Length: 77
Image (cartoon, rainbow, N blue to C red; front, side):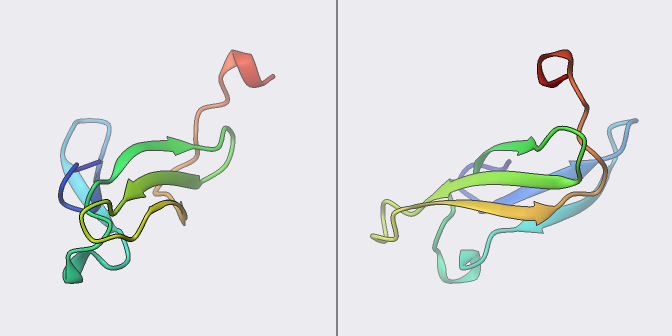
């Protein structure tokens, strides 16, 4: 997540950028504090936290389709 930019950059396994996910409202200066992108294990559902404390918009969790599936880690088996 790019804190202060309202977006999440997506990289391939070699570290090259292949895309980005934009938070709604970022072009108007809202929800720029994007943090903690996390996949729901075993799915392509990505959850992104963001807040808009400067503009009075509160905090939000966004769910988007990611570019891949999340790792099914041991703790979720």
